Image: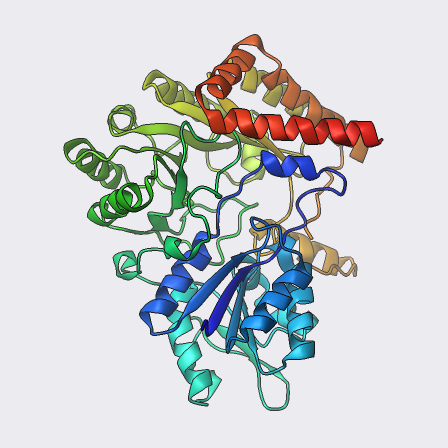
Length: 410
Length: 64
């Protein structure tokens, strides 16, 4: 019997009447939940994972599944787009069985844990930052009736139903100490889990993060969960994971979903050497900044199976890049894209439209910039202020000065 | 729910228009279209997903 259920709630990502879009969008599982489930299993629990969207489950169905299994704990991972549905699931569970402890975590909680707990009373505990270390201490404290104030990195309700926040935990220094993600707990893995169409050269596909954290200070980005200090898996561990995925599940392509995979060229080169000498039949894609890649590294990455690199280019206008505190220029972006293309690696450019200061002229510059680059593919998003980003902090202060309230909990 | 920031120089409609313009400027180029056609033909999962997408899209069109 499962004593803990991890839930990725349904997201409000497809406009009503456009269900056909689900066939082409990203259908990858939550890597965070896979790691938490693996950690829970290592700590002696029997976890289950529910991927609501990927299994086409409504909040009602998810709540019914939980009630039928009747676990001690439920852990819900939250991006901002999932908060309402998560709150519905929690309410439906609590109405029938108030004894099930409902914990929430994930990026939205790391940046707005306290406010979210204030707004949604059916969430019992919020785990901020990296959940793997918090989980063990939290579960054992609840089971042994130990005071929760001794668990670092949480927001909880005390006996008077007052919200309390504990100090942040130290970050996980040795990423190699984390267990292998529990892919075996996913129903029909890997067949049922594909990234967005054209985002992979061959299937089956898996995702993995070989590092955590990003030291750069782009104003639109939220680094609340993993922080600004980069920590890495050893190359040996990454190679071991790739071999495991290949042998156990027949994975043919791996997407590295790190905030910044190419942060340290020496680390990347070390992994490439391993992949060249002890070959794994797997292509891979990753993220990089335009000012961290070097031509020699790119050539080696290609040799080691790198298929595509995603660069956050954001804009072709230096003024806009400056506004975003991106610490790059369009010239540096163009140079990196050209180097990558020359190395034979596909280039995906990630762009943003409508950032404060954007004008019709800057959009025109970006359009010309895009046309001038040897990009294989591009993504464009309209600027969405993330809770936890420096932008939203400054903007909220600006609004408060003007005595305008803004509710960022949802 | 996320919300989208609207830069001062644009109305919502202008921002939507520019968004579509930038996307089509890139994706309507012959080089890019050929690339995607080749990718679709080289991987059966892409073809299957495209077919399901267009089937759903046509159903929606017929309904409306």
